[in-house]
Length: 488
Image 1 (spheres, rainbow, N blue to C red):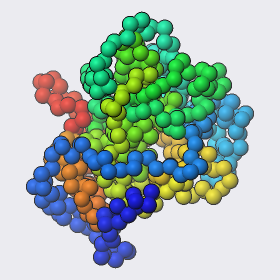
Image 2 (image 1 turned 45 degrees about the vertical axis):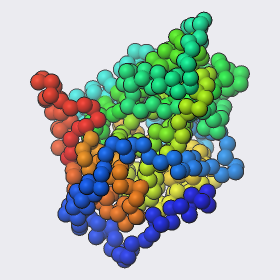
Image 3 (image 1 turned 180 degrees about the vertical axis):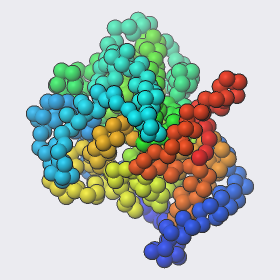
Image 4 (image 1 turned 60 degrees about the horizontal axis):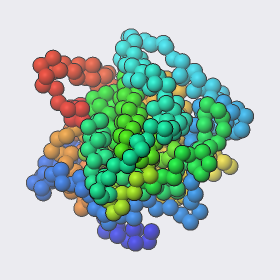
């Protein structure tokens, strides 16, 4: 840990602008200075080779008291379960209601949220079509009776624990690398934009697991069908133009479609592996922390907003996993750095854009929450304390979801790394690890000069309309691929 801090001292050298004027200076000079600096940086040789990153990172850093997280303490699991929120831990809702000075019940709020059907066609982003696209995006999971996986329910039909269909003959991969290559190729075919492979690490699984249907805990040793050796982590893309409409109902299209895609891909890869004669179980938000395993599998770095920031996509991905007993030998991926977490220390775009104030404004990562009310006894029950990261208050985020009557993607849409596939995006990825803190801040402030971000509590009507006409070119087959999108 000490070595990590010392390695970054040079990158964190303070600039000479007075602290009181730095951010206002950046905002005044963003349009002109930001574009000039970014344009000049392109000649430094920005290219997609910057996706490789560096292995010079400790990956996930935990303290000596760190232990696996009880799934019953995951925010969405607690809110979904009547037993957990009303019988086992009713004091949590009472505490939050008292501190927020409002009548609030986690489970009751979620039940109302799930049965929404009203709309206002005179309010951009909150009309009938905006509501309908969200329902349509989630519909594959509804048909498959697997939507509960988004709320951490294990062993749904799409992520079944059954191993009855394992082929009796085991395919000979030839080597761990060959197995990894074939599985990544399968993931690409099914729609993944990144596939990484990590060793199974008990620290980052939920233990015990919790069955929301039967309201009971489950054990890895007694209930899970096999002993995992590896975790395959898959990133699926979300549409750039739809995400940009956040926090409108329109953006629920990207959320729901992301969950539908990740469940589909996870169950397809798990089925492929079982067809090759090996154990495999797909997972969405259940079984383990997707962010932790994505970092372990080298897909990206942890961001201020609590998501994994994937080079080339930013946080605009959904993550799923496949647990398997395949041993990939020496072909496992390793944690990598692109200077993203360091960048997040200066860039606070997601925190500024968060409608609920749930995202940390801290200047550095920590091993425990520092946000408002964190000194209230047991208020931080939902956080996985002991990991060095930025801590968000998921309860405030959940509260805004209920008020807005849909989930929120502001922290994704506002991220400096959430950009279309244009030259300045790759320039940032290429030069970012070598830039001092001052330039990180300038890059972040220059981000809106290109038309990106700019999210607030209310959606921008022009971005909502932009999404609704984004498919215009499809009639002539000239539309660009999903992750390109357009600025503005």
